[in-house]
Image (cartoon, rainbow, N blue to C red; front, top):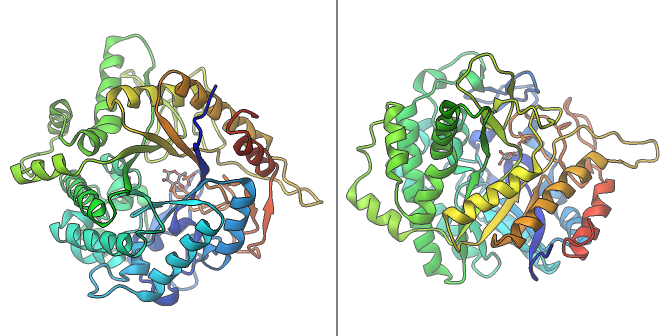
Length: 485
Ligand code: BG6
């Protein structure tokens, strides 16, 4: 098993899940700031204004905003070659449509990226990770409005110009294909129905009104925005590598029933391939469009001019998150599983995490080969992967997270095999390299990190950082370029 020289080992977080300081230094509200916490059984809730005296997990998060130097030093101690984080759009343009950017926000990221470079860590920056400014959600219907394309392009080019010598790797939208699912309407494209904006009671995110037609039009606008940013970004610095980012979930037919096979193929078409085809190949796949039409979507919003732009603005690399696989069957009554954005049917061969996400290292290899065959030649990065688990702090402060090491080891082994089988994999950033707020549940005790953060679901904790066993293990993995697992 041979990871290539210069392989980008590292870790990933997102601004809204780690920074906190949600109104500091001129930052405006973002979509993520409006979500209260939930748990494995209870969805997070949404309310269109901040409720006094309620605990919002992301408002302080793990206070990375004030701890970033310490945290980056810890990443460097592990030997990180890259660190993936996002820029919180509402730190730069607090309302999204402001005339001028917020200098304090720009300065924060400049200092943070400079700190990374000081330690020899290459920043990998997501431009939009569920962080659409609240004003854009409220007054523009998110990406459903064509105006939001221009606002996003202005924001993206502002930061690309500012950090053109600090950041080389950019991702335009996190998990863009999440918008194929109802929850992606809120998190991904910033779309909230008028009646939900006028609610007087918090609404569980699972009950937010879905608007599929608008959701797909908003996704199309994100494709256009991404294409423009790829084109503009390359003008700012021709060395930029600008990628797409998708959630990848292998879907397996539960039985050999051809109906299960067809249902699985349909899911692959809509969920796994639809967005990648547009962003990598530069055109909508006709099979994908027909699948959408079968869902009742009128796709006449795609113009000839749009098609030309999509063709021109294709990405330089394909990146994805990978946590689980799921099964599909047309039979009713099968046991189901959970997942990020979407669950499925339980696979009798796999175990699941405490949050019901099925653990499938071989699924990662399957997926890598699938992507590499579909888009031959494009460099691939796995930019999220990890196990959300409960950690126990021993009396001496140590944390023995062997379950996390087992999970990561088995996935890295499969990545190595995929490379040997021809996949051009260039990097791997584990999710939540330091404990962060969970996106789906808002919990702190669903932990992914190599670094433990003393922060809890009741809002207690002093934000102190400590090294888990996995910290020392990952350090060894990186030092040996994936040989010593
Ligand atoms: C991905 C997201 O879907 O999964 C991250 O890009 C998220 O933001 C991660 O945190 C893990 O999900 P969760 O719900 O366990 O935090």
